[in-house]
Image (cartoon, rainbow, N blue to C red):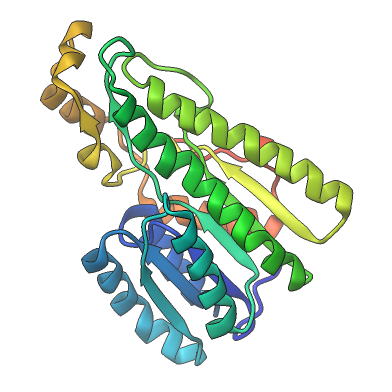
Length: 257
C-alpha cells in the first residue's frame, strides 16, 4: 500500500524501544498519523518526543497510550480511541513481545502463560480489534512480528518458540482469508533474527536453565555478540514490506555480517 502523507494512520505496539520505536520514527517520516502503545510509559514518552518534531512538519497527529497488550479490554479501548482520535486506521504493527528461557521440565505454567498472553494473545487481540476498522478504511495492512525462533526451535526456548510459531500460523491463515475476500488489506509476518533490541535483556531466564549446562548471564553475553542488525534497518525493511504488500511466507528479516 502507499503511505499518503497526512492521511495514513498507523498503530504500533511495543513502541517504547527497539524495533517499535524505529517503526514509529520511520512511519512519522512517511507522514503518518501515529497511535503508539507500550507497557513502558517512560520509554513510550521518549518515543513520542522523538516523533513530535517529525509529525509537526506534516501537521500529523500522534497518540501515545500505556498499554498491556495481554488485556483484551485495554486493547479494544485503544483501538477505538485510535479510530476516534485519528479518524481512521490503515496500518497495525503488532510488535510487542517478551522472551522466556527455561527447560520444559522446569518451566512453570505461570511463565508459559505469561509469554503466550503477551506474544500470542496480544497479537490476536490487536489483529481482531483493529481488523474491522482497517477494512472500513478500504485499504490497509497488518504486520505481526514473529521471530527467527518462529521458524526453528531451540533448547530452553519452548515457550518463546511456541508463541512465535503460533504467530506465524495465525498470520498466514489471516493473510489467505483476506486475499480470498479481496478487501484490499495486506498481511505480513516478519521473522527478525539477530536484531539489537531489549528483548533479551528483559527476558525471564530461570536458574533451572543450568540443567542444560547454560549460565543465563553468559548466555546473554553470547547472544549479544550475534546481534548484527540494527532496529532501524529492520524497521525500514518492515515499512518497505508494507509498501510492497509482501506476503507473510516471503518476508524474513535476518541478521547478516
